[in-house]
Length: 105
Ligand code: FES
Picture 1: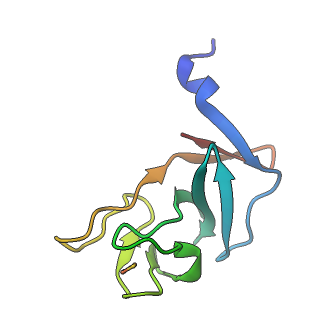
Picture 2: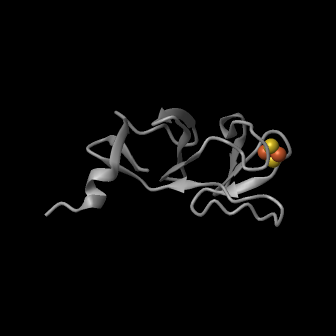
């Protein structure tokens, strides 16, 4: 039986990104970043919460994404900024089914 949550998944890619790469995707006017990092799929806002710069310009460090402008980093699972004066990054549930990538916004 399908629930309301099942209808909120949106297909955004026909294949998973390559390990360690970041892909920018626009979904419903949201600029999102999709990455496969250490075997885990993540979807986050592609906008640094500190100032308005794309995080796809940054790099992956362990389980964090590091912004290219001032070097703050954010946990890919939780969005935690680890900085008291910087908001957390928004994260979205992501899953892979039949080699296609879905997110729940
Ligand atoms: S704009 Fe990203 S850390 Fe400052």
